Picture 1 (cartoon, one colour):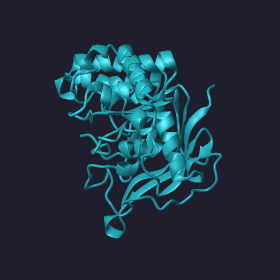
Picture 2: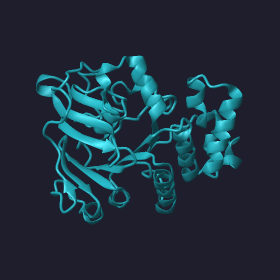
Picture 3: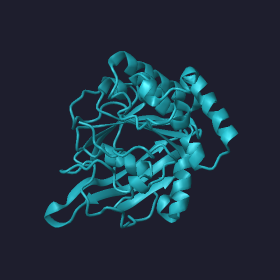
Amino acid sequence: MSAAVLETENLVKVYGRGESRFDALKGLTFEIRQGESVAIVGKSGSGKSTLMHLLALLDEPTAGVVAMNGRPVSQLKPAQVSELRNDTFGFVFQQFFLNASQTVLENVILPLKIAGVGTAERKRRGMEVLEQLDMADKAGNRATDLSGGQKQRACIARALINEPSVLFADEPTGNLDTATGEVVEDILFGLHRDRGITLVIVTHDDDLAARCQRRLLMQDGMIVADESGEAVRSAGASVGQTSREGSRRVGGHGKHAAPVVVDGPGLDEPGPDGPEAGPTAPGAATAGAAGQVENAGTTGEERA
């Protein structure tokens, strides 16, 4: 069995205080193993986008532990967290967040520019990843000249430019028609299959979730079912459905110490899954996710 790449222990996220308090996540304990494909599903407001932002180190928990390769992230300095995130994670969002004034190639290589990679090497690596996605002929085009599917492929190219080991996708086909969405899905699962990339997908789409090896069903800030194998393929769409054969239950206490309280940014602000959902995950604006969230002014928005 592969090692756990991401782990949580009693993970809590709270927005507001007093009467305005909203508990977005309520003590989640689980792990994601290297090379897994995992779908996080649930109704709007269930906490799935909040969970993704904490796993992706785009935000900090109110309490509890997020560990990367066995090491609690709270032990790292902010600069180390940014470096870890930029070196390890790729991001694909429902919104494309491409800079309309730049070419496709310039958008794709932005993470390398932020990382200080030289001009020639940036261009070489950018063209290489565009060729892999059949987008090399669009390298000089402006983002506004692309179709929806081409824009999402450009976003995937940008996510892959730093060769991440974990790819987070938040409703990656939400803005695409069915046929184009299936092409994008095939690309994502091809990367998972051929490169061993760990794939974490937040989605409302039951068909997309069924393609994953594992399905975390969220309700009211809790994981109410953790299904794998045949249970994922046969699972119904109703939130709150209990896990069936092949399912694993979550919760309890893991190997990490008692919850570590973190005074995360924006503690008084309603979160992306809160009753007054704001457009940006707290901390995301300063997260510095190597250009992948550089243009993502609404990365934390919970999708309807």
